[in-house]
Length: 171
Image (cartoon, one colour):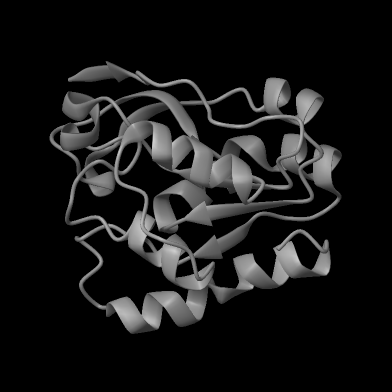
């Protein structure tokens, strides 16, 4: 079934890194915000690596991201998808990242999982390279479908996000 991305990107002029998912899950689309499935470990991983309280409400999540100079969006603006499985995504239309790059000084783009990274490589690489001078970095997916990665292993792998923020003296 064809789906169009239902959320706006979260960023402001102070955002330094951009984390791109693939496309919102059924639960996220139903609940109206990024990584809304309680089984998705995105918010817990970020809170852990940033040594910050876990944000609960949508407003707290937005404030959390902006306070840590993190922008989030998804690599696909529309696609054909059954359920929430990235493996079932076809007919992908990539997102336009230019409004984010024009407003924020993004220094690094991270892909949350393989499908997001695949979309970045196939459709968005030139746009990302032109804006940041760096290739997107693939991080392991925080999705509950990524059962190969324990929470602790995800935290270890995602620490590069904190390193990037520290290098920019942002933390």
